[in-house]
Length: 317
Ligand code: GFB
Image (cartoon, rainbow, N blue to C red; front, side, top):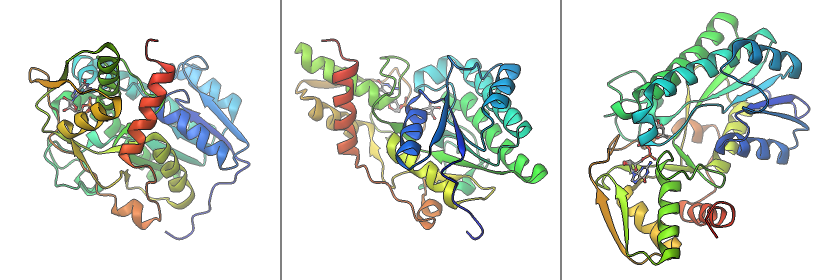
């Protein structure tokens, strides 16, 4: 793409959601890449569901760049059982942030969507053009609709006000600092916890949700952070850009990889009363590849890295 100027490393960058899995990785990455003024915003700093508080916060910080990694997130169970909060909190957070960013003249903003915005039965790998072409997966339709509203908002700020704001569409994210709650978390931290704890206690059975047949693609949070900066430096288009690694695994295979990494040798059984969710959501990353970015962290390494973090930071000693 022509005419894109890489971000000025002396710019004030606001990372919304700076203590979350993605936001904290973005803060680390920006600092490592020479950004001198990176300001984090998380719930202790400002309540982004409150319009006045959000406006006052941005007015005080006066960022010229914003990375929006703030969201209510969770795994399939949390999405499925709390759709009201996943819809309304996320609509509020992004609306307040965009309104306040526009008011203080934020030049570059990156909004993080999610691969669940694509229809349940999309062509695989899923191109960005699949957006709004079919029915959503029901377990996360409320979250997906909020994220789709965010994408349309980004396009609208571009069209109506000429803002150079963009959207990235990451596949399932994982890494150190993730939420390891046994019920609310995503599959990778849930399995790391369950297999680690089973190996530690000598248990001979671990129960995994669903049938094991769904396939998922996983991007490490550090890779996603690097992709976000790459997009801010090199992309200025209305279309979202998928961020993935180009390969997926079945949940059954993932369970065996995590079990082996955790040193668990007992049985794996399946609780088919739990939902499978989308059968497959491998992203087509041709657009991002053409922009010159590729992932650097292999899944097997990332799982060991995340398991080590869980062992040192969360696991009961
Ligand atoms: O990671 P996960 O919760 O999210 O589940 P989704 C992925 C798959 O792993 C599903 C299975 O087929 C689950 O049934 N699974 C197996 C488990 N065991 C477990 C477990 O112990 N915990 C969890 N959580 N899953 C989410 C969306 O969908 O993906 C969000 O609900 C968001 O909106 C996120 O988009 C990225 O990939 O199914």
